[in-house]
Length: 359
Ligand code: F6R
Image (cartoon, rainbow, N blue to C red):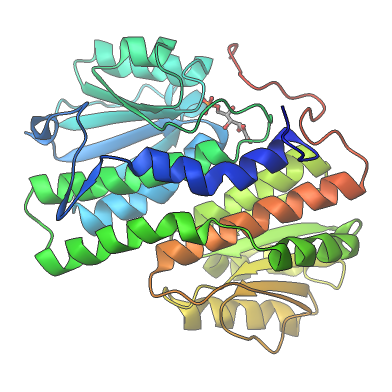
């Protein structure tokens, strides 16, 4: 069943290129996005999007919030479902409420969805499991088509969720008439390139195997990025924590100087996400500050970076979202190889369950 892979997680990391193709199948037409399962009227009267989710699905939501504001020009905020539930949230009917869940069964997310529904909001779930509690509850469903995910650490669920949400941002942008023909064409072209960015070369996997040796000890990890690379940093840190049991934090790169930089020393490992196509100079200067304070730097970038102690070169692409998926592969492989070297059970990490149906 593992098809020759050592773990389900490894198989699922490798499957991402093909499941993301499945997830786009029939949904990208010449100059627009089509979702058979929803009407463009879903956005009628909507002035705001609120996203609710947990864990990795929350990170996909956070990524999407940048895309919804940038592409669809609609205000978007994201909340962790367990926080949302008890904060007495103010809900208005001009808000589209989106929940994201691989399983469709996560208790906190399901409860948040019910709260929004009871408050009379339009609800949409981005989900991997048809006929789950969430798809049965929400007004509309978009399936991610990732196939069964067995590894407790979520991989292909995240990449397909991110692609669906990106497509949804374009769907709304077109419905609201806020996107130019040129930008739409460029985005659709880029979407079609995503499966290629998720293909894994032997070279990059070997590199991550070698690199993993250097990161088995230390005081901890900071994964840093800006814009959509900030949620990606959160996701990289979560993957490492859950299967390697090493302490890792994801942080917005520009925020390091407001506290965490005090931790910098050679035993603090900074994993820096340095895309060429988005705020490169900004993240570069954030990393330079950390390097000047002797943090050990592992830079992931298409551009050479002299100050890096370790450097992972990704393919050069012309859109930041392609860099996003190239880096996602690197982060997933890195955490898996570290976990394997530590002798952990990659697919069944301690204390974790695949579906969290209790709050
Ligand atoms: C992390 C992971 C969890 C889930 C979270 C939400 O790798 O798998 O953080 O993402 O429990 O689960 P779903 O998406 O099923 O609602």
